[in-house]
Length: 312
Image (cartoon, rainbow, N blue to C red):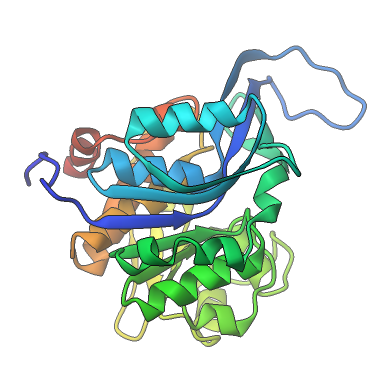
């Protein structure tokens, strides 16, 4: 398998979110009222849509982002990132009505995390703003979206992508109840195990078997459900496939960016025309790679790094 990026990669448009991530490591996850000393503080770019746009660019795709920023200093974190990573910002909106989104991330000693978000300007993304990128979406091989923006905007992105003949990927994070009318425009739905449960109106720790719940979600009209399951890999369910794709074993440092890395690599593989199982294999390898480094953007694989992980 060659490690060279394609000369002309697939065109992938991400309709999504940007937030500045403020990360700190603590020995334990704190409870309310508790004060802890932390370490390894980091301020850097985040937001699931932004992360995925950077991830697909690093893997050789033509990456475009449709997102909304404030008119503040934190917006510069986004614009500098996209210039450095080669992400097209033609449809990056700026607003004075709300601040650029922020996320606070606390990591414990084993690499588990919790995240608190104020999505700020991202909440102003709407179908009208999505429509301004109609030509960009129409020229895309893959259209991606997330739920850190209003559902109506994500739904519009999926509908325009499907109408244009692109493959559509919805990463339903953070998970909320979704209308069936949105799901019918989604080719690939990529929840993790807790998001899968929330999509079905259950508690995130509901004990019902994941496979059973994935089948229930498929019956709502999604073409393919791909449930990411951490170190176990990913479950694929559609009319032809019902199987697990295992992930390579790694020493976990930080799980924060694993889901975004999975979706980015999966999208690039689908855009390059790889079979579904191989595309998911790319995804789980990229997710595993992301767990080996601290921080989201530093952990997102370049093409040669992903190919190296696949060889394992």
